[in-house]
Image: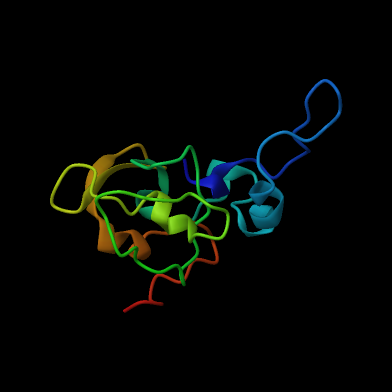
Length: 127
């Protein structure tokens, strides 16, 4: 899941009052889409779910392309978050993605940087 789609309203807490989910949520929450779908500018280019090696991710436009698209050897917190999505899942270096407007398509891994992951994502960074 595109981690920026998590609601920024309120805190996630378990019955004991401790925060759940990963600390990355708190780090990236200010870059997310406020109040989710109603405020997403271009829903046809904003991914909601894609093939990945982890449950979510918060890619930034300066994330690098991994050296190996065939397997991800780490999901360490210091690895670029785009690596979670930049995998050759279906051959031909593509992943399946669903978008906020409801459509689905096969996306070339290199084109992941052209998608609007969050309002501040610079789609021209690597061009």
